[in-house]
Image (tube, rainbow, N blue to C red):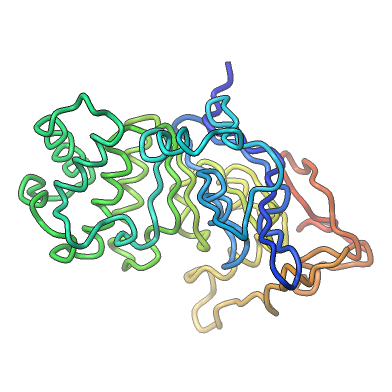
Length: 325
């Protein structure tokens, strides 16, 4: 029996605009297993968040999931009714947003919101029992005096504390999958490290699968079991965290790692990938990364196909460590 909680195959999400169709997600295929953390990495506009929203059916018009399969525990969510998706969201698949105030209602106390998160999916649970579960969830994410914090309003908590509440709320129904959309971006480094530790511990404890979306490979280096790198709506490289961090094969992955603070020598300028991400509307037949790539060759006039090279998924004509024309 497959251990995959989520299996995405050839997912394509398109936004219809006056200028033409924008292929925000273009042929993405990946899997996530129970208890596994998948790091989904790339620059802004690479399609990471849209991939997460596509899984949950949260892509609004003029966007739509145009093709592919989203198999969640064997069920294709593309065929799920709106009523079925509402039952899944928050119960079986939860999402942690970048800004916890997108999750938390500023005029309701924490206890009210967490109790609603439980009773919305399990009506047989009493308010007292739901309150106990909320207190346990807050304690599990390391919030001191969780009973007192339940009666706080979001504005009375720090940014890091609000994000812990958002994580506790995501885990309270013990979902099979959590999608975390850059939840530590606005936090300082110390709090960020604590949040990463909490998320990792929760996945190990509950066997929850997680997709951690970020632009920073440094963030997922110690968190993820597997890393997928996206560029212009496509996966360009995917492998174990150790493979990607210690031996990146795609030039874009290599550039992202060199751009992480702390990887350069003292006195040297921090590396910056040259050029800008091209408009997805302007993409032609060539490799989308070719204009910025130090290893481009004549072959790059045609976009590379997906293949398994060096025991990992790779989309590149001239991988790092190889010679080229």
